[in-house]
Image 1 (cartoon, rainbow, N blue to C red):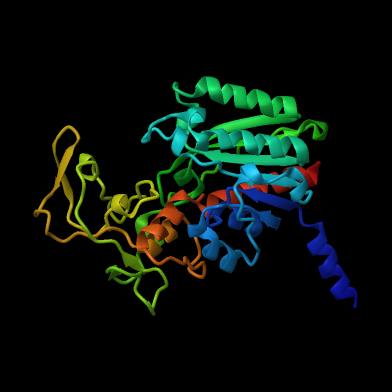
Image 2 (image 1 turned 120 degrees about the vertical axis):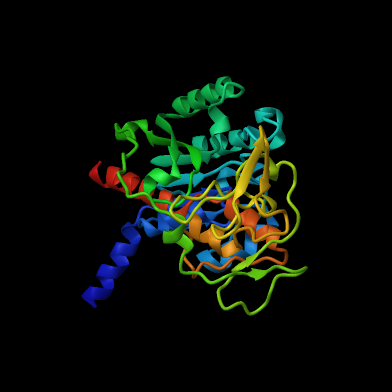
Length: 337
């Protein structure tokens, strides 16, 4: 009886989080692995619903955040999420809050102001603090300050956290001012992880044809075929086994090449080609290989009818290990306070 009560108390004492713009839930999984209790999640992208709910065992609020009242959300210790990044991406139109997706940042602020949890975390692309958007970013920081939070932000690279991928992202973390603490970004001296560490044990993947392949021995271990655009061929897309991966993007068409693929040769500025010709030994990374590089465990299954949706979910996610390490630091801060 005493053991049962202890377990119940431990569960109740876990700090709780609300997740907004959850996607398939890489950020959420990292926080759960760090000992947080996920009590609410929201995303209106139907392509992620099945994957999120089957893996996280929690029902998603599938409405757009603009239609969600703060009264609909439970109280929690923290709010985490990554508002859509396309409006701030250096590779995109860079429209910021001139884009309806960019304005969703202010719905995040609205809910944060109403709920006032102990902490919040926002993840986004480096374009958020580019010259084009720095004025808007400073306005957002000032709003966080007015709401009542001590703010810390930094551009972090996933490879510095032991993740086998070069992936730069902006993290903004705030602690409620009455806690009288501020977040300090940890300096990890992790051994750099390579593609061999991440995917070296996987056999060759199955070619995706028309519809997703059924009954795969390794879930989601299928890759997209097809030609390569001039944009794809504008840069090197192949890393060796001993190196970390290029950034995993939210597009199968732009997935990096497998390390066993033929190497690419630079012909001139923004123009590369395959050493042995376009029909030589090459293939893109599989969906599962991209998931491994994003540090999703193999028992995290992605559900999709079109393989492009799998790549998109994974590319939009926060690397699980990065989320977990940041979450552990937040939990230690809260417990110390």
